[in-house]
Image 1 (cartoon, rainbow, N blue to C red):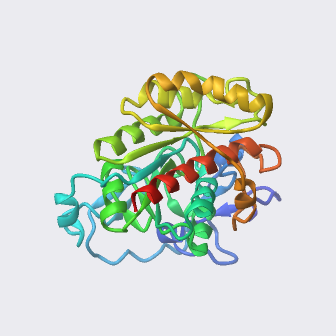
Image 2: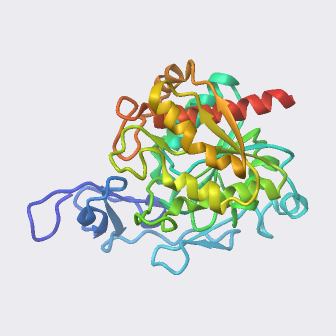
Length: 338
């Protein structure tokens, strides 16, 4: 796509449900903020409109939830928990998630690795992803989620808060968890923000703080929160090397309910460092050491490319093994109760 007034081309992404389907030769209105900022995740121009050929009005139907509210591209969807939904009565009466393991993670990039750990430990488990709105709002932006769904590793996605585009829509993390359990039949749920992450280099100013809030939601509903730590051996920033300060804040300060914090048995001095850093979380949570044998092979079998902050498995093995260990523990919890 060529930018007007220049000979420069750029990649652009159109959410066809919102703006229609661009055709060769169309003139389109683009938002280029992501390109101007050089964002690693979402480094695309976004199609705002096809001004010479606007899409037809969507068919009028049930659904009164407005997401991405009061933005030019706000979307009206049918919420699983709203009165017009066929699932309204189920969610109106549901009050818990029946000790379902709920894996919470800071970054979207942990999702494939968590699923790899579950698949290695308990193949065929019904796993639902509850997507928070701290990153991308449209679930369609996640190619990983789509490919994991196609491969059978992921059963469905529920988009909550301002996020939209999942198999089911819900208003809050709480109703998202209830929908995952009682409508989609989830055995394990993974809660994480969509692709992208907002951080300011301050203790509290990062979108992953919602990880601690997800622990609280899971506990309030009678689930078993399983905390996946953010660990890195490839991040050059000291605050993220080893155990990230984000995990220490989200689980050590924000999460008021008790979770099972998975500490991977990583080898060598680095593994010892992570275990020492995680020890402080034992004051509030239950620390569970989990072996990582066989998990690298499980990660290599995934049908999606592993990437976190531009680093793949070879550059940040510890990050993906840690997330996979959380998935393994959740699967073991499930196996122990069935």
